[in-house]
Length: 249
Ligand code: SF4
Image: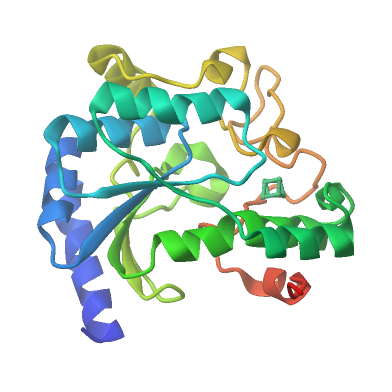
């Protein structure tokens, strides 16, 4: 299928998904040709998608990026989720040579020192493992929601990701946090205990803090940076970040 064909398919899928509920959306995705991969951060939105896939036994691969800097609570939730839904969550870890090269250039926690150093760390610990997780996939399912941040306010149900040459599906795009909480309650979905301690969005431990009342959901991510649209690069074009990546020895 050419890039133009994938774009057309994504546009059509975007319209079809709008009228369906979550289980119907995922079932439709699972019937498309090619391998579908869902990447989970174990956050509450992703736990809803994992539950919907697991409860319906859908043929969608569930993968996570084990960055090596996750909270213990997140790490523990991987096993608990596998047990609850009788599934295996594929784990993708960074290459040790990449981590060593990063540490030599920036220091292990060099991400606090500059945006360049932070993007370089996310590249090594997240983006490169993500590329392996999506290798051979035709469909990438994510837990993005429009209400998570201004940066995500126009998230479509489906779009063609030209950088990765696959169709990206966001089946929770129009869900509110209240919808998420209701699903979690109804299906007894295991969630990260950190959510109840002020962490609506959870990433790596050194780069996530609890938010204060009234702050945006993602205010605790890379809180020391000033850019209000800060992301790790998983869901935006990588742009300048790659130029900062040290070459592993
Ligand atoms: S979130 Fe922080 S620790 Fe995790 S990969 Fe990005 S910079 Fe590194």
